[in-house]
Image (cartoon, rainbow, N blue to C red):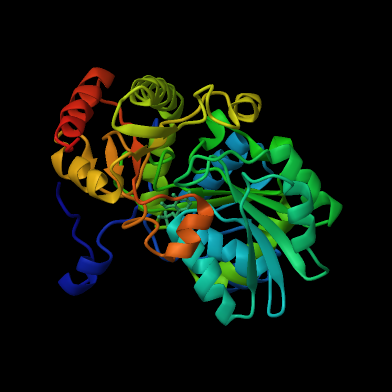
Length: 401
Ligand SMILES: Cc1ncc(COP(=O)(O)O)c(C=O)c1O
């Protein structure tokens, strides 16, 4: 490549050098807009973009074409009007909660949620005088118990389904009805299912949350999050939180999620079929007392899962009869399955919730949520299921008794 001679000094050419504003290359894949800021045509254009009277971008913390592509795609896939892409799943949950609730308010959440979400709700939101009211979803009389937690300061309901790490299933239509009775939104963390397997907005939820770090990205190489819903609420989250608290996603990460999304359907088909195979096999293993997978007929909410999910996704949990010591032995003896937190990657990941992802729970909270010391969580990857089974079998063999 040769640089044309121009009238500028070398230092100026190092900064400017080439004019790329004419770039109209017909890329098959949308390019990544890695830019912090955007040029205005002139003063009036800049002022007009700021006051909203003219279209245009200002600054990537607020909006960026690559972020817009991802937001548009996720709104389409979830059946929402609009979406916000965030720097992480936690940023998405914080943005939602801090917008919908303020000092003196409370919200109802199921007690089996990702450990980071539990810590945000239980420790940090309390500092802002926003109180979580946790409920165990699987116990009897759920309608009465949820209703007894609501008052005029309850601002939203939050659930994960399938839930991390218990794989319990929330009946979305039922919870949406309960939320509607109090004219508050139901927020569903759809990370485990993805929009390919479950569409909470079509069942009455008002907002969907994702850790895009997981199945949406799908390759274990980014951190990102999403909030999807109706335009007025999304707009509120944008102006009341995102613009000035600033947890926006990097355009590069947004682009990688867009890339990952293209293979979502075939990945979820494979993750789901492998998980079902492994769940069925583990269910009859003598060292395992219980397998938690919504695709098993023995799962207490199998029928609800069957009604609201297309397949049952790629995550399962199981209780080892030997408790924490057996879990430690298993995790130290797997060779193909990787001992790591996170989920939804191409690689099979295995971890111990009580001492890892859910170490934010007290002993009492773990018990209330049904997270035993012998519980192991497995996120099935895209390897051949027989190889995963062989690996688990030899690691289980290494456990005494
Ligand atoms: C169900 C669920 N929601 C939210 C999060 C938080 O997402 P992130 O790690 O992208 O901040 C996680 C992380 O594991 C999760 O499993």
